[in-house]
Length: 303
Image (cartoon, rainbow, N blue to C red; front, side, top):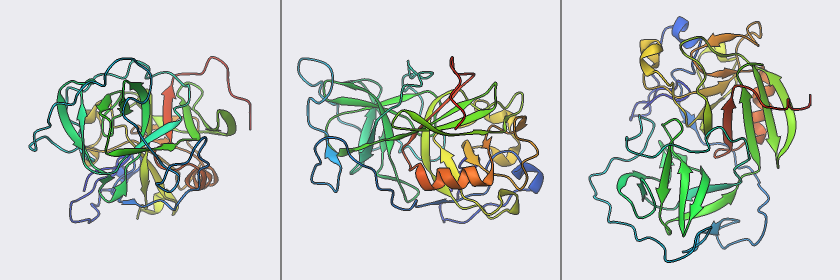
């Protein structure tokens, strides 16, 4: 398996142990678990898929015919927990904190392109290591949808119509690096704010838009027996983190003490109180967007 939040997986599903001193800063040796079902109110008409809406051809902004999708060779890589394939375009609005309100769920293996009608570069599966995949939709264009790419920072993947469903996203997490603050929003309104520990110099928490990929149950006592939220983002400089964290993802997790909150002490992960982490686990489902900025122009109210 591969790393989440600094989680590393093996294909056989076994956990990989790492020294305690390495565990201290990114989420290590973790395995994704299926999140409990979260009931989300779907705005507008409800489709036949248990509250999910099938994305119709030609849906979304743009005029004219839907660009055709070139056949995707079977040899293309599948996006998983390892480094994402290269060639995907940058997210032009990566620092935008406007909530993304739609999530895309592959119903089968679908091809991901570098542009509408462009070059197929990889496949997206309905699951990543057994965890259902939901990726936020960042743009729509004449039937195609651009989604935040898992296992990559600040990159989009374009998918053609068909083979996926849409689910509403009500929650958002915004992390500010300068004030070391995490704010949970629901339906655009701030619900709670916490002080957090973030990445140390040279291993800073990556800026930009990402999302909650899934959750993992750690075995190490340093996580205080609380699950981790694994994000789609990875360290900006994989070679800067300890060797045991190569291939890791960024995670949101708690710690066995709160003495480092408000400081830069991690390998890039976001660390908050145990009570705050439990609330996020209960309220923020996979697919929810996460944005890391230096600082919001207007601080959120204390809630």
